[in-house]
Amino acid sequence: MSFFDNLKDIYRKVSEVESAVYNGKQDYLEIYERNLQLEKEIEERTRELNIANKRMLTLQHIWDMMNASRPLQSVLETIVNSIQGELGYLHCNIIKKCEDENGIYLTVLAQSNDISIKRVDKLIKGPIQARRLVYDDNSIYAKAAHEKKIMLTPDIGGTLKSVAPDIQDEIIEEVVEGSPSKAIITVPLYTRNLHYGWFNVFSSRKELTSGETDFLTIFAQQIEMAITIAGLFEEVKAQAVTDGLTGLYNRRYFEEYLKKEVTRALRQKQAFSIIGLDLDHLKQINDKYGHAYGDLAIKTVADVLKKNARSIDTAARMGGEEFNVILPGVDSNGAMAAAERIRKALEDKKLDTIGHITASIGVATFLEHSDNIEDILELTDQAMYQSKRNGRNQVTLAKPITETSWQEVAINTFMDILSKHNIPLDEDISNKIKNKLQNPKDEIPKEMLYSVADMLTQVYNPLHHNGIMKSKVLLAVSLAKRFDLSKDDIDKLRVAMLLYDIGNLMLPSELLQKTSPLTEEERNHIKEHPIIAAREILQPISYIQDIIPIIEHHHENWDGTGYPAKIAREEIPMTSQIILIVDAYFALTEPRTYRAEVTPKQAIEIIKQDAGKKWNSALVQEFISLIDHDI
Image (cartoon, rainbow, N blue to C red; front, side, top):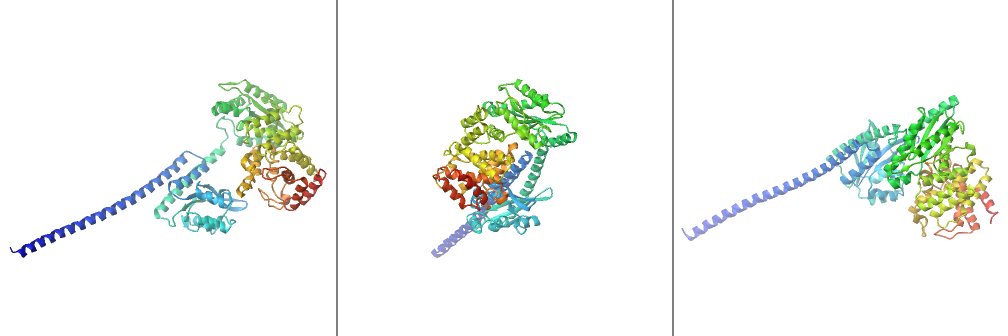
């Protein structure tokens, strides 16, 4: 074979090798690309499985809650926080459609606790959950309910405007621009075949996948079932008539039975009595021995009541350590004897670890002390706290309604507040005030009350001087007499003057004693004190319910610019107007941490400037004529 033939043969073999290598490379590339595709598909399926697993866990969580028969509000709050946290939505809420005498409105029933909602609440200067929202027939909510399907909208600002049209456009723009949310997904909710509301999801995506739609549909069904079950649970609970701890009747049953007994007593003209009992020192028992022993003491009271009651008597636990007993056909003498038997039987009981327990007891009789059952309940409470004030472990008979002085009402109210620990007060101060109330010695009751009110005021205002409260009350009473207020209204005013600022005890001391100017948020917080005083501290006290509105409205302005209700002119109780002007005058003439006091004449000039706006002009005129005698 020639040289050239060999060269051709070699070239051919090289070509064959190259061809084989190339073909192998192509096969390898195809296999490599196929592997990449498979890995991508596996990753995608894994991600989908993880999402599905999270969704299943969330649904399981809801199912577990429903089986636990938890209250509705607790279930809904857990739902929104679960889906928000586990599935990555930015914010979730449940909105309920409501209706009252003023028409249809919306309210946020539950919402996830996240940064997004906190930011919105700050921008709109108040929690969205506390607002009465507008129902707009053209909104996404109305459309979703009408068409019974899930809907998505990227118009977050428009949706917010539809439910809260009073929010300024620039604030809504700021809400939208600073939010990572790109769309709202709204899911209509139904329970017992009736439209209930909507479940809303704030998403970082502008689209809604079919898988997401399927999940939200299933999720909505679970929410609906949770609402139905929890709602039924609350209805059954509300209808229950016995107290779980003691086996006695509860407050609800007591109130229903009392109505029937009043009807019977009026028809037959036969008196009946109520015994009110308050277990002494329950807090000390709980603190020293634990709540299990506190429960033992409460159950012991219940056992004593059961053993000492006739078959026709009705004993009920009213809440906490308070009990009431209705004694049909029994006058005050018989009721006092029955109450003493109960007191003695309780005192004779000796419990493990605790030892002996006692109770403070009050008695009032329908048709004897009053023919108004609300008065009887108040008198029972007052007599019970009179027993407590006089040293506990005793029985006190109520005085007829006309004989109960405003001083007694005020003393019992202070005792009630301090005994029930409705305010965060230093224990030494609390004990000092209690001792003063319980052991007045030779001190005139009203002078002692002025002193107690001064002591409480100094807790949140260290610059307050002793004796100021007496001056305030005397000035307020003099002003009330200028407007021919009745004795009853003047007595209520006296009590209200002692209590109107008690809500300040619930506010942070650093806020009330701040030396620099307050922020708007801080001012709004301070403005809450009338509501705090009225609803959190005084509302549970039955016998001062007619005094609460006076306190609640003592910062309302004549022109409607005050707070909290923004009522105006004659809508404001005259007693509330009197408190406002008296309080303003003394606030100006007393030093504050952020300013010095002004002279009485300067204070009068400041008050004059707001006549007809903050104050009733006639009130200002009479007020100035009173002050002029002293300056």
